[in-house]
Length: 329
Image (cartoon, rainbow, N blue to C red):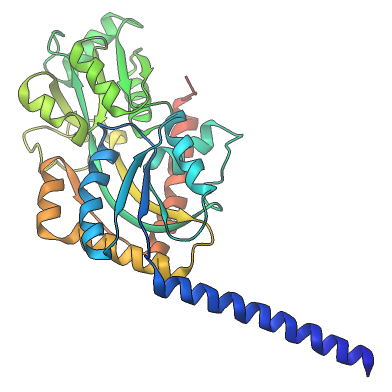
């Protein structure tokens, strides 16, 4: 009887602990948000992800009734900022706005990453995406893709392409082009799209792949010569530009996508509420129009849809890296 009583007491204590935890979680979810929320952008200002965050943040702030602070935490191709969120408290007050690189590509290039892209995050929403723009400096004689390829074949190893960093979609786009067109161009990685575009405009590097939001204005002003976009269909932001698929290079059907994630173990009620608010924001006509003007298309998904998408993208980019032989620079 004594042993049975002790077992009953332990069982009751465990049940009370679980009930207490559930009660605390429910209270947190009901009160959320009760203070400012940080959005971590793991790249420097001037890139497509930073642009998207700064369009999204004011609308989330209005709808949630709390201050939204955008913080750029760049380094290591987005992995520094992602790791900071992975290690943050799972209380709904630190949100990662991430791109393809740090969630689905880097794991294939860096076997000893500080975080696990699947286990250390709770997916919230695949919020939007943008095509990449391939452009050259106006000092280059090439006016179209075939002329770029001809120029590169005549100057093996002498021309360079810029990207927002090793392991990003921009980097892999260049590796795919090298393989598909059989050309030898040198990868020059930068610490984000902003610095890459600055050097492209300045002529320090001859060409590059950049997300449309970071470079479309320079293409419109003539500081860069646009060649093609990587989306499967022409971008509404630049309908005059052909796609690589149209030009005979379907392997360059790529977009850079922007997704929101919380640290793992964030309460489901908080995740669901933030997902709904992000999806609501990107669907608003004024936000959609502002994004689309810069080549960013609104999406908006459930957390489960983002989780499945990340798994499929990880498999896709693993295959691309194996086929192109892409390596960390």
